[in-house]
Image (spheres, rainbow, N blue to C red):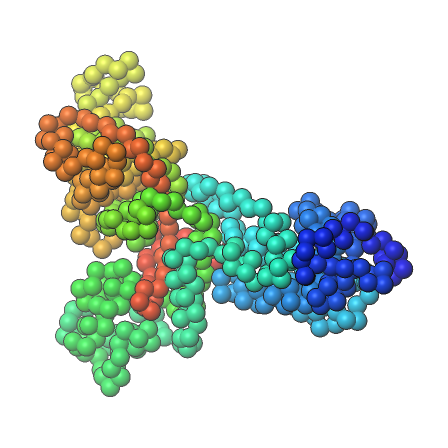
Length: 527
């Protein structure tokens, strides 16, 4: 104890020169908080030597003194750890049980034990703060095709301010994702926790169920619909008839799950009904983690794609300018998650066949019949850039050729594509398969994102450019059938992201996990 008392640094008194009523003052050779009279102990060199660099920095910013001397700050931190489950985290990851036990007996700890406890609190603060700000897991270690920018943070500045202002709770609020979607996912976790536990049987059907059908599975379906509050009439729940009330409940359930709300009970509806409360809760927690990976600020103007929702929105100055249905990559050729910036628009684009399609589609099909090239309107170029005929084509060296489809309405890219730099060579574009947008399941492309009514999106983007392009000018470009590349001068960010849950008008929304990412992510979070 004597050693600790005599080691107090006078330099810490600088704090009292800032006209701060909460500054620490020297009293009987001990440093104390001027307001609460709580003792502030210094760390000894042997304590500091054992700390990792980031923890050393926190203590250095506070003159190598005890950080958590204030009961208010400790209480805030403990409460934040307790409540971390609301953000999809596990409180036990942050030493909650040990901290509670030490806090209860803190008054009886000697100085050495208090300082060790203080270091534990600091380590727990850092861990929780970083997990809230950028997630517990690193997406680059989980996925090879996720290109998300790192989220650096000067955490020591946040801690220093929170400690001095006795506002640790506010500090954590500043670190949490602030995006509206994240807040709605958090709310969905609260909502689902209010549902009782249940144990319904899994449903399996051979054929689609239509209105007025009668079969035993309808009883279980009604019970599940009633559990999720889509079905509100209790008196007919034990009947095996697919009646009108159940039909309306099914349509509501389908709409909440991104399914075609036609009332026909098929594979997608049954699959969604078979989820348990616990599985849905795990899904919510996985989505909370993903949103911590996403940027804190999307910028003033951006295109935001949610892959599992088959949806694209164009936002400018917090106003949603456009919404579009999309088609995304299949599970075998999934669309990557990435962040980029719109560089240009190409009207009447040609299409150069990418390597994956050359290997998996073009080569096998052309080997069967050279008519493939005529049918797909592909021109073949050899390594010198000369055009060759299909008869001259060597399937054994198919990768050495370049295959280009002429522009036009029936081109694979349609009438316009939206380019943004990325290592996956993906982009947004029109399509010659416009019927796909009416389908319920739309993970059908080879990796790029197909946009419904893309000329409307192009017009709205170009309208914001300095030149102020009009729809008439765009129509003229299309009608001339000439390839036209228009640079995008405005900073328009592009986000291809992935989330399968949120809350909308107090109703739980879920989407099919088309790339089967939710379950594995939850498992990784809890390991």
